[in-house]
Length: 233
Ligand SMILES: Nc1ncnc2c1ncn2[C@@H]1O[C@H](COP(=O)(O)OP(=O)(O)OP(=O)(O)O)[C@@H](O)[C@H]1O
Ligand SMILES: [Mg+2]
Image 1 (spheres, rainbow, N blue to C red):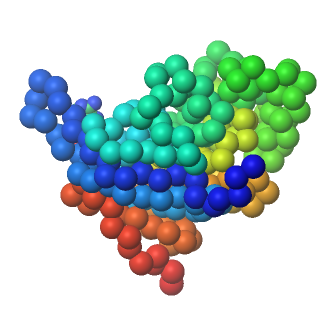
Image 2: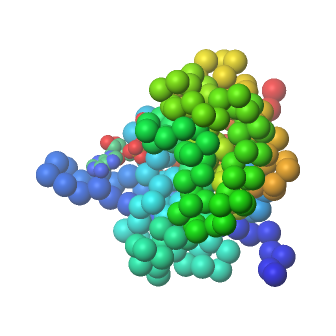
């Protein structure tokens, strides 16, 4: 087993959206490395390309140019199907809006990545139960998303992202729609699990308080990433 700490490295990432309108040059040579167990925040103004970058880093979208290595695997060399399988097993996504499946219960939503990965049902049940307990949802497992509060929905989304024990969680403004109490709760859940499972976390956030507790903060600006001094205190 590789003992290396380097988890993800992206080099010279470019992305331009072309369509009917003027092309939008969103990413103009982004470099970033993420180590195992890192906690990294990405900040930047609205429209600066944060979601675009996160989707590319996580293999949800492809860059026009540049390479993304996950450990020693080059994501750009994978066909769509292989990439989807890779994502399912290695990367957990949490979005601003939870994207839970409305017709399924919290428990079933958390099952989903495990089912897709073809894990044994006994293992899936055990892991899902554990994660829902860890996220404070023990008594809400059989609720559908519409029967959960916004904060609870988002914690289900975190549990779902963790189902397959990913090495990295990529979260795009996961607290963007939450009040202060729910923001605190979501962060503490994330940090607890991070500590237990050594999961790296990349967090996009507008919240300067969150960026303030993150050891590494990058700012996306004019299509490039600058390291900003972490604003502790
Ligand atoms: N599919 C698309 N086609 C064309 N332009 C797009 C597309 N998706 C995003 N854009 C443009 O690319 C730019 C970056 O979008 P992106 O969603 O990455 O920004 P963001 O930093 O996540 O913003 P926010 O903080 O508002 O979520 C924006 O100007 C947006 O209008
Ligand atoms: Mg965004």
